[in-house]
Image (cartoon, rainbow, N blue to C red):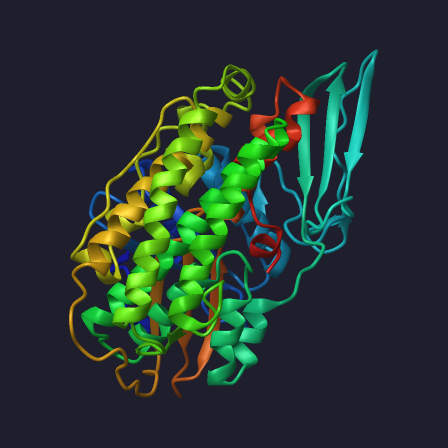
Length: 492
Protein backbone atom coordinates (compact mmCIF):
# COMPACT_ATOMS: atom_id res chain seq x y z
CA UNK A 1 0.00 0.00 0.00
CA UNK A 2 1.33 3.45 -0.94
CA UNK A 3 0.64 5.79 1.97
CA UNK A 4 1.98 8.10 4.63
CA UNK A 5 1.89 6.19 7.92
CA UNK A 6 1.33 8.26 11.08
CA UNK A 7 0.34 7.73 14.70
CA UNK A 8 -2.65 9.07 16.56
CA UNK A 9 -2.18 12.83 17.24
CA UNK A 10 1.11 12.93 15.34
CA UNK A 11 1.77 16.06 13.29
CA UNK A 12 2.80 15.53 9.65
CA UNK A 13 3.57 17.72 6.65
CA UNK A 14 1.03 17.80 3.86
CA UNK A 15 3.74 17.44 1.22
CA UNK A 16 4.61 14.05 2.74
CA UNK A 17 1.25 12.62 1.62
CA UNK A 18 1.61 10.63 -1.63
CA UNK A 19 -0.93 11.87 -4.20
CA UNK A 20 -1.57 9.23 -6.83
CA UNK A 21 -3.51 9.16 -10.06
CA UNK A 22 -7.06 7.83 -9.83
CA UNK A 23 -6.28 4.20 -10.69
CA UNK A 24 -3.29 3.93 -8.37
CA UNK A 25 -5.28 5.61 -5.61
CA UNK A 26 -8.08 3.05 -5.95
CA UNK A 27 -5.60 0.16 -5.99
CA UNK A 28 -3.76 1.44 -2.92
CA UNK A 29 -6.90 2.04 -0.85
CA UNK A 30 -8.30 -1.34 -1.88
CA UNK A 31 -5.09 -3.01 -0.74
CA UNK A 32 -5.39 -1.40 2.69
CA UNK A 33 -9.04 -2.40 3.02
CA UNK A 34 -8.18 -5.96 2.01
CA UNK A 35 -5.64 -6.03 4.85
CA UNK A 36 -8.40 -5.36 7.36
CA UNK A 37 -7.85 -1.63 7.84
CA UNK A 38 -10.91 0.48 8.74
CA UNK A 39 -11.84 3.66 6.91
CA UNK A 40 -12.06 6.77 9.10
CA UNK A 41 -12.12 9.45 6.40
CA UNK A 42 -12.62 10.10 2.67
CA UNK A 43 -12.70 13.77 1.68
CA UNK A 44 -10.75 16.57 -0.08
CA UNK A 45 -7.75 17.90 1.75
CA UNK A 46 -8.77 21.42 0.66
CA UNK A 47 -12.41 22.35 0.05
CA UNK A 48 -11.28 24.64 -2.75
CA UNK A 49 -9.65 21.71 -4.59
CA UNK A 50 -12.29 18.94 -4.50
CA UNK A 51 -10.49 16.95 -7.19
CA UNK A 52 -7.72 16.09 -4.68
CA UNK A 53 -9.01 13.72 -1.99
CA UNK A 54 -7.45 11.67 0.75
CA UNK A 55 -8.35 8.31 2.23
CA UNK A 56 -7.62 7.63 5.91
CA UNK A 57 -7.37 3.98 6.92
CA UNK A 58 -6.71 2.92 10.51
CA UNK A 59 -4.73 -0.22 11.32
CA UNK A 60 -5.33 -1.36 14.92
CA UNK A 61 -2.58 -3.98 14.80
CA UNK A 62 0.16 -1.35 14.34
CA UNK A 63 -1.74 1.54 15.99
CA UNK A 64 -1.14 3.52 12.82
CA UNK A 65 -3.15 5.56 10.33
CA UNK A 66 -2.46 5.32 6.59
CA UNK A 67 -3.01 8.46 4.50
CA UNK A 68 -3.26 8.10 0.73
CA UNK A 69 -4.02 10.96 -1.62
CA UNK A 70 -5.73 10.75 -4.99
CA UNK A 71 -5.86 13.36 -7.75
CA UNK A 72 -8.81 13.03 -10.12
CA UNK A 73 -9.53 14.66 -13.50
CA UNK A 74 -11.37 17.89 -12.68
CA UNK A 75 -14.12 17.17 -15.18
CA UNK A 76 -14.64 13.51 -14.20
CA UNK A 77 -15.01 12.97 -10.46
CA UNK A 78 -15.89 9.29 -10.54
CA UNK A 79 -14.39 5.98 -9.48
CA UNK A 80 -15.32 2.33 -9.03
CA UNK A 81 -17.05 2.08 -5.66
CA UNK A 82 -15.08 0.46 -2.83
CA UNK A 83 -18.40 -0.41 -1.17
CA UNK A 84 -19.20 -3.16 -3.67
CA UNK A 85 -16.55 -5.22 -1.87
CA UNK A 86 -15.95 -3.36 1.41
CA UNK A 87 -19.29 -2.41 2.97
CA UNK A 88 -17.71 -0.26 5.66
CA UNK A 89 -16.89 2.41 3.04
CA UNK A 90 -20.54 2.75 2.00
CA UNK A 91 -21.46 5.87 3.96
CA UNK A 92 -18.11 7.60 3.42
CA UNK A 93 -18.73 7.36 -0.33
CA UNK A 94 -22.27 8.69 0.09
CA UNK A 95 -20.89 11.69 1.99
CA UNK A 96 -18.22 12.32 -0.67
CA UNK A 97 -20.89 12.20 -3.38
CA UNK A 98 -23.24 14.49 -1.48
CA UNK A 99 -20.68 17.13 -0.54
CA UNK A 100 -18.41 17.19 -3.58
CA UNK A 101 -20.27 15.57 -6.48
CA UNK A 102 -18.20 12.38 -6.79
CA UNK A 103 -19.88 9.43 -8.53
CA UNK A 104 -19.06 6.03 -6.98
CA UNK A 105 -19.78 3.74 -9.93
CA UNK A 106 -21.87 0.64 -9.06
CA UNK A 107 -22.32 1.81 -5.48
CA UNK A 108 -24.70 -0.68 -3.77
CA UNK A 109 -26.91 1.90 -2.05
CA UNK A 110 -26.26 5.57 -2.76
CA UNK A 111 -28.40 7.47 -0.29
CA UNK A 112 -28.60 10.89 1.36
CA UNK A 113 -26.41 11.62 4.35
CA UNK A 114 -27.60 15.05 5.47
CA UNK A 115 -29.78 16.13 2.53
CA UNK A 116 -32.97 14.15 2.97
CA UNK A 117 -34.43 13.96 -0.52
CA UNK A 118 -31.64 14.27 -3.09
CA UNK A 119 -28.47 12.49 -4.15
CA UNK A 120 -25.69 13.59 -6.51
CA UNK A 121 -26.81 17.18 -6.69
CA UNK A 122 -30.42 17.23 -7.83
CA UNK A 123 -31.45 13.62 -8.35
CA UNK A 124 -34.54 12.73 -6.29
CA UNK A 125 -34.00 9.95 -3.81
CA UNK A 126 -36.50 7.10 -3.72
CA UNK A 127 -37.07 5.30 -0.43
CA UNK A 128 -37.06 1.52 -0.58
CA UNK A 129 -40.53 -0.03 -0.68
CA UNK A 130 -41.50 -3.62 0.03
CA UNK A 131 -44.33 -4.89 -2.18
CA UNK A 132 -46.82 -7.67 -1.43
CA UNK A 133 -50.07 -8.59 0.24
CA UNK A 134 -50.40 -7.44 3.85
CA UNK A 135 -47.22 -5.38 3.56
CA UNK A 136 -47.49 -1.97 5.18
CA UNK A 137 -45.24 1.00 5.84
CA UNK A 138 -44.90 2.74 9.19
CA UNK A 139 -43.31 6.19 9.19
CA UNK A 140 -41.98 7.69 12.43
CA UNK A 141 -40.66 11.23 12.80
CA UNK A 142 -38.83 13.41 12.03
CA UNK A 143 -40.78 15.25 14.74
CA UNK A 144 -41.18 12.96 17.74
CA UNK A 145 -43.57 12.95 20.67
CA UNK A 146 -40.79 13.34 23.23
CA UNK A 147 -37.85 15.71 23.48
CA UNK A 148 -35.45 13.79 21.24
CA UNK A 149 -33.88 15.36 18.18
CA UNK A 150 -35.35 14.99 14.66
CA UNK A 151 -34.85 11.81 12.66
CA UNK A 152 -37.10 9.94 10.23
CA UNK A 153 -37.62 6.17 10.32
CA UNK A 154 -39.50 4.19 7.63
CA UNK A 155 -40.41 0.62 8.50
CA UNK A 156 -41.42 -1.87 5.81
CA UNK A 157 -43.46 -4.46 7.71
CA UNK A 158 -45.32 -7.67 7.10
CA UNK A 159 -47.62 -8.04 10.04
CA UNK A 160 -45.62 -7.15 13.13
CA UNK A 161 -42.21 -8.07 11.67
CA UNK A 162 -39.90 -5.42 10.25
CA UNK A 163 -38.30 -6.52 7.00
CA UNK A 164 -36.54 -3.27 6.23
CA UNK A 165 -35.88 -0.06 8.15
CA UNK A 166 -34.60 3.03 6.41
CA UNK A 167 -33.23 5.81 8.60
CA UNK A 168 -33.21 9.33 7.15
CA UNK A 169 -31.23 11.98 9.04
CA UNK A 170 -29.79 15.45 8.51
CA UNK A 171 -32.72 17.57 9.70
CA UNK A 172 -30.57 19.92 11.77
CA UNK A 173 -27.41 20.22 9.73
CA UNK A 174 -25.65 23.08 11.52
CA UNK A 175 -22.48 23.34 9.45
CA UNK A 176 -20.15 22.71 12.39
CA UNK A 177 -17.16 21.87 10.18
CA UNK A 178 -17.54 25.13 8.22
CA UNK A 179 -17.94 27.09 11.45
CA UNK A 180 -14.71 25.52 12.71
CA UNK A 181 -12.92 26.96 9.68
CA UNK A 182 -14.38 30.44 10.07
CA UNK A 183 -14.31 30.71 13.86
CA UNK A 184 -11.79 32.59 15.93
CA UNK A 185 -9.41 30.51 18.03
CA UNK A 186 -11.29 31.03 21.31
CA UNK A 187 -14.60 30.13 19.63
CA UNK A 188 -13.49 26.71 18.42
CA UNK A 189 -13.44 25.20 21.89
CA UNK A 190 -17.07 26.28 22.39
CA UNK A 191 -18.00 24.73 19.04
CA UNK A 192 -16.24 21.46 19.98
CA UNK A 193 -18.18 21.34 23.25
CA UNK A 194 -21.43 21.80 21.30
CA UNK A 195 -21.02 19.11 18.62
CA UNK A 196 -22.96 16.59 20.71
CA UNK A 197 -24.41 17.69 24.02
CA UNK A 198 -23.99 14.28 25.64
CA UNK A 199 -20.36 13.91 24.52
CA UNK A 200 -18.83 17.23 25.51
CA UNK A 201 -15.66 15.64 26.89
CA UNK A 202 -15.13 13.21 24.01
CA UNK A 203 -15.34 15.75 21.20
CA UNK A 204 -13.48 18.49 23.07
CA UNK A 205 -10.70 16.02 23.89
CA UNK A 206 -10.25 15.16 20.20
CA UNK A 207 -10.34 18.83 19.20
CA UNK A 208 -7.71 19.81 21.77
CA UNK A 209 -5.50 16.92 20.65
CA UNK A 210 -5.65 18.24 17.08
CA UNK A 211 -4.72 21.80 18.04
CA UNK A 212 -1.98 20.66 20.41
CA UNK A 213 -0.60 18.40 17.69
CA UNK A 214 -0.51 21.27 15.21
CA UNK A 215 1.29 23.50 17.73
CA UNK A 216 3.80 20.92 19.03
CA UNK A 217 2.33 21.27 22.54
CA UNK A 218 3.15 18.67 25.19
CA UNK A 219 0.84 18.72 28.20
CA UNK A 220 1.68 17.57 31.70
CA UNK A 221 0.82 14.13 33.03
CA UNK A 222 -1.45 15.70 35.65
CA UNK A 223 -3.47 17.44 32.94
CA UNK A 224 -3.61 14.23 30.90
CA UNK A 225 -4.93 12.32 33.92
CA UNK A 226 -7.51 15.03 34.63
CA UNK A 227 -8.76 14.77 31.05
CA UNK A 228 -9.01 11.00 31.14
CA UNK A 229 -10.80 11.00 34.50
CA UNK A 230 -13.31 13.45 33.03
CA UNK A 231 -13.72 11.24 29.97
CA UNK A 232 -14.43 8.21 32.14
CA UNK A 233 -16.89 10.17 34.28
CA UNK A 234 -18.76 11.06 31.09
CA UNK A 235 -18.67 7.40 30.02
CA UNK A 236 -20.09 6.23 33.36
CA UNK A 237 -22.80 8.89 33.34
CA UNK A 238 -23.99 8.09 29.83
CA UNK A 239 -23.85 4.33 30.32
CA UNK A 240 -26.03 4.78 33.42
CA UNK A 241 -28.38 6.87 31.30
CA UNK A 242 -28.48 4.16 28.63
CA UNK A 243 -29.21 1.42 31.14
CA UNK A 244 -31.97 3.56 32.59
CA UNK A 245 -33.37 3.97 29.10
CA UNK A 246 -33.53 0.26 28.28
CA UNK A 247 -35.02 -0.46 31.71
CA UNK A 248 -37.68 2.16 31.09
CA UNK A 249 -38.49 0.71 27.66
CA UNK A 250 -39.35 -2.66 29.20
CA UNK A 251 -41.43 -1.13 31.99
CA UNK A 252 -38.98 -1.38 34.91
CA UNK A 253 -39.57 2.17 36.14
CA UNK A 254 -37.94 1.69 39.55
CA UNK A 255 -34.77 0.31 37.96
CA UNK A 256 -34.74 3.16 35.46
CA UNK A 257 -35.09 5.85 38.13
CA UNK A 258 -32.40 4.14 40.24
CA UNK A 259 -29.91 4.42 37.38
CA UNK A 260 -30.97 8.04 36.96
CA UNK A 261 -30.23 8.77 40.62
CA UNK A 262 -26.70 7.40 40.23
CA UNK A 263 -26.12 9.33 37.00
CA UNK A 264 -26.87 12.52 38.93
CA UNK A 265 -24.12 11.67 41.41
CA UNK A 266 -21.65 11.13 38.56
CA UNK A 267 -22.37 14.36 36.69
CA UNK A 268 -22.38 16.25 39.98
CA UNK A 269 -18.87 14.87 40.51
CA UNK A 270 -17.83 16.35 37.17
CA UNK A 271 -19.33 19.66 38.29
CA UNK A 272 -17.18 19.54 41.45
CA UNK A 273 -14.14 19.62 39.19
CA UNK A 274 -15.14 22.28 36.65
CA UNK A 275 -18.49 23.81 37.62
CA UNK A 276 -20.44 22.15 34.78
CA UNK A 277 -22.23 18.83 35.11
CA UNK A 278 -21.47 18.15 31.43
CA UNK A 279 -17.80 19.12 31.55
CA UNK A 280 -18.05 22.42 29.70
CA UNK A 281 -15.15 24.74 30.39
CA UNK A 282 -12.80 22.06 31.70
CA UNK A 283 -10.60 21.68 28.61
CA UNK A 284 -8.34 24.41 27.32
CA UNK A 285 -5.57 24.20 24.77
CA UNK A 286 -2.49 22.96 26.59
CA UNK A 287 -4.29 21.26 29.48
CA UNK A 288 -7.26 21.89 31.75
CA UNK A 289 -8.69 25.00 33.36
CA UNK A 290 -9.43 23.51 36.82
CA UNK A 291 -7.38 21.32 39.14
CA UNK A 292 -8.09 18.63 41.68
CA UNK A 293 -7.72 19.47 45.35
CA UNK A 294 -8.22 17.55 48.60
CA UNK A 295 -11.80 18.74 48.97
CA UNK A 296 -13.12 17.84 45.53
CA UNK A 297 -11.11 14.62 45.36
CA UNK A 298 -12.61 13.41 48.65
CA UNK A 299 -16.14 14.32 47.60
CA UNK A 300 -15.79 12.72 44.15
CA UNK A 301 -14.45 9.51 45.69
CA UNK A 302 -17.32 9.52 48.20
CA UNK A 303 -19.88 9.98 45.39
CA UNK A 304 -18.38 7.23 43.26
CA UNK A 305 -18.20 4.80 46.17
CA UNK A 306 -21.98 5.11 46.42
CA UNK A 307 -22.28 4.61 42.66
CA UNK A 308 -20.04 1.53 42.70
CA UNK A 309 -21.96 -0.08 45.56
CA UNK A 310 -25.46 0.73 44.34
CA UNK A 311 -24.94 0.03 40.64
CA UNK A 312 -23.77 -3.46 41.51
CA UNK A 313 -27.07 -4.18 43.25
CA UNK A 314 -29.18 -2.62 40.48
CA UNK A 315 -27.28 -4.50 37.76
CA UNK A 316 -27.72 -7.74 39.66
CA UNK A 317 -31.47 -7.19 39.76
CA UNK A 318 -31.79 -6.15 36.10
CA UNK A 319 -29.68 -8.93 34.64
CA UNK A 320 -31.28 -11.67 36.75
CA UNK A 321 -34.82 -10.57 35.94
CA UNK A 322 -36.57 -13.18 33.78
CA UNK A 323 -38.79 -10.49 32.31
CA UNK A 324 -35.81 -8.30 31.36
CA UNK A 325 -33.78 -11.15 29.90
CA UNK A 326 -36.78 -12.30 27.84
CA UNK A 327 -36.90 -8.87 26.21
CA UNK A 328 -33.10 -8.43 25.91
CA UNK A 329 -31.85 -11.79 24.66
CA UNK A 330 -31.98 -12.52 20.91
CA UNK A 331 -33.58 -9.12 20.24
CA UNK A 332 -32.04 -6.78 17.68
CA UNK A 333 -29.11 -9.01 16.74
CA UNK A 334 -26.20 -7.75 14.65
CA UNK A 335 -23.84 -10.68 14.09
CA UNK A 336 -20.12 -10.31 14.49
CA UNK A 337 -19.42 -10.88 10.79
CA UNK A 338 -21.97 -8.28 9.73
CA UNK A 339 -20.78 -5.80 12.36
CA UNK A 340 -17.23 -6.20 11.05
CA UNK A 341 -18.32 -5.75 7.44
CA UNK A 342 -20.29 -2.55 8.01
CA UNK A 343 -17.69 -1.08 10.37
CA UNK A 344 -19.49 -0.78 13.70
CA UNK A 345 -17.35 1.04 16.25
CA UNK A 346 -17.19 1.45 20.00
CA UNK A 347 -19.63 -0.20 22.37
CA UNK A 348 -21.95 -1.25 19.53
CA UNK A 349 -19.10 -3.08 17.82
CA UNK A 350 -17.69 -4.64 20.98
CA UNK A 351 -21.16 -5.99 21.81
CA UNK A 352 -20.90 -7.96 18.55
CA UNK A 353 -17.44 -9.27 19.40
CA UNK A 354 -15.31 -6.68 17.57
CA UNK A 355 -12.10 -6.27 19.55
CA UNK A 356 -11.38 -2.56 19.07
CA UNK A 357 -11.07 0.26 21.57
CA UNK A 358 -9.26 3.47 20.69
CA UNK A 359 -7.91 3.81 24.22
CA UNK A 360 -6.06 0.52 23.68
CA UNK A 361 -5.33 0.35 19.95
CA UNK A 362 -4.52 4.07 19.39
CA UNK A 363 -3.62 5.12 22.95
CA UNK A 364 -3.60 8.81 23.83
CA UNK A 365 -3.23 10.93 26.94
CA UNK A 366 -3.13 9.06 30.23
CA UNK A 367 -4.17 5.79 28.56
CA UNK A 368 -0.62 5.49 27.24
CA UNK A 369 0.56 4.98 30.82
CA UNK A 370 -2.52 3.58 32.58
CA UNK A 371 -4.28 1.15 30.23
CA UNK A 372 -7.88 -0.01 30.43
CA UNK A 373 -9.17 -3.51 29.74
CA UNK A 374 -10.76 -4.52 26.45
CA UNK A 375 -14.26 -5.92 27.07
CA UNK A 376 -16.34 -7.63 24.38
CA UNK A 377 -19.43 -9.80 24.20
CA UNK A 378 -20.32 -12.06 21.28
CA UNK A 379 -24.11 -12.11 20.94
CA UNK A 380 -24.70 -8.70 19.31
CA UNK A 381 -28.21 -8.35 20.78
CA UNK A 382 -29.86 -5.90 23.16
CA UNK A 383 -28.60 -7.99 26.08
CA UNK A 384 -24.98 -7.63 24.93
CA UNK A 385 -25.28 -3.89 24.40
CA UNK A 386 -26.87 -3.43 27.83
CA UNK A 387 -24.57 -5.80 29.68
CA UNK A 388 -21.49 -4.26 28.09
CA UNK A 389 -22.52 -0.88 29.48
CA UNK A 390 -22.57 -2.38 32.97
CA UNK A 391 -19.14 -3.97 32.51
CA UNK A 392 -17.66 -0.76 31.10
CA UNK A 393 -19.02 1.19 34.08
CA UNK A 394 -17.11 -1.15 36.40
CA UNK A 395 -13.90 -0.72 34.39
CA UNK A 396 -14.25 3.06 34.21
CA UNK A 397 -14.78 3.29 37.97
CA UNK A 398 -11.69 1.15 38.53
CA UNK A 399 -9.67 3.52 36.33
CA UNK A 400 -11.01 6.64 38.06
CA UNK A 401 -10.33 5.35 41.57
CA UNK A 402 -6.82 4.30 40.56
CA UNK A 403 -6.03 7.76 39.20
CA UNK A 404 -7.71 9.75 41.99
CA UNK A 405 -5.77 7.88 44.63
CA UNK A 406 -2.42 8.39 42.89
CA UNK A 407 -2.58 11.84 41.29
CA UNK A 408 0.72 12.96 39.84
CA UNK A 409 2.12 16.43 40.43
CA UNK A 410 2.75 19.12 37.86
CA UNK A 411 1.16 22.10 36.21
CA UNK A 412 -2.30 21.79 34.68
CA UNK A 413 -1.62 24.07 31.70
CA UNK A 414 1.16 24.46 29.13
CA UNK A 415 1.55 27.50 26.90
CA UNK A 416 0.42 26.91 23.31
CA UNK A 417 2.18 28.45 20.32
CA UNK A 418 1.07 29.11 16.77
CA UNK A 419 -0.20 26.35 14.48
CA UNK A 420 2.42 25.11 12.04
CA UNK A 421 1.85 25.80 8.34
CA UNK A 422 1.09 23.15 5.69
CA UNK A 423 0.57 20.48 8.32
CA UNK A 424 -2.05 18.01 9.48
CA UNK A 425 -3.09 16.04 12.56
CA UNK A 426 -5.55 13.17 13.00
CA UNK A 427 -6.95 12.60 16.47
CA UNK A 428 -8.92 9.49 17.46
CA UNK A 429 -10.62 9.40 20.87
CA UNK A 430 -12.82 6.73 22.42
CA UNK A 431 -16.01 8.56 23.34
CA UNK A 432 -18.65 6.68 25.30
CA UNK A 433 -20.35 5.67 22.03
CA UNK A 434 -17.04 4.80 20.39
CA UNK A 435 -14.51 6.17 17.94
CA UNK A 436 -14.49 9.98 17.58
CA UNK A 437 -12.22 11.38 14.86
CA UNK A 438 -11.15 15.01 14.39
CA UNK A 439 -8.86 15.94 11.49
CA UNK A 440 -7.34 19.33 10.68
CA UNK A 441 -5.08 20.66 7.92
CA UNK A 442 -3.40 24.05 7.77
CA UNK A 443 -2.45 26.19 4.77
CA UNK A 444 0.93 27.81 4.13
CA UNK A 445 0.05 30.62 6.57
CA UNK A 446 -0.79 28.24 9.40
CA UNK A 447 -4.54 28.86 9.12
CA UNK A 448 -6.85 25.83 9.31
CA UNK A 449 -8.11 25.15 5.77
CA UNK A 450 -9.92 21.86 6.37
CA UNK A 451 -11.57 20.46 9.50
CA UNK A 452 -13.33 17.10 9.46
CA UNK A 453 -15.31 15.44 12.24
CA UNK A 454 -16.56 11.86 12.50
CA UNK A 455 -18.84 10.91 15.37
CA UNK A 456 -19.29 7.17 16.11
CA UNK A 457 -22.97 7.53 15.19
CA UNK A 458 -21.86 8.08 11.58
CA UNK A 459 -20.80 4.43 11.55
CA UNK A 460 -23.43 2.95 13.80
CA UNK A 461 -26.83 4.17 12.57
CA UNK A 462 -26.73 1.48 9.89
CA UNK A 463 -26.27 -1.09 12.66
CA UNK A 464 -29.67 -0.10 14.08
CA UNK A 465 -31.12 -0.53 10.59
CA UNK A 466 -29.87 -4.11 10.43
CA UNK A 467 -30.80 -4.92 14.03
CA UNK A 468 -34.49 -4.37 13.22
CA UNK A 469 -34.68 -6.89 10.39
CA UNK A 470 -37.02 -9.76 11.28
CA UNK A 471 -37.66 -8.04 14.63
CA UNK A 472 -41.09 -7.06 15.93
CA UNK A 473 -41.78 -3.38 15.37
CA UNK A 474 -42.79 -3.11 19.03
CA UNK A 475 -39.14 -3.76 19.92
CA UNK A 476 -37.91 -0.71 17.99
CA UNK A 477 -37.75 1.64 21.03
CA UNK A 478 -35.73 -0.96 22.95
CA UNK A 479 -33.33 -1.61 20.06
CA UNK A 480 -32.98 2.12 19.42
CA UNK A 481 -32.09 2.83 23.05
CA UNK A 482 -29.65 -0.08 23.17
CA UNK A 483 -27.59 1.68 20.48
CA UNK A 484 -28.40 5.15 21.88
CA UNK A 485 -27.05 7.02 18.85
CA UNK A 486 -26.71 10.73 18.23
CA UNK A 487 -28.66 12.80 15.73
CA UNK A 488 -26.55 15.93 16.24
CA UNK A 489 -23.30 13.98 16.06
CA UNK A 490 -24.37 12.64 12.68
CA UNK A 491 -25.93 15.80 11.29
CA UNK A 492 -23.08 18.16 12.23
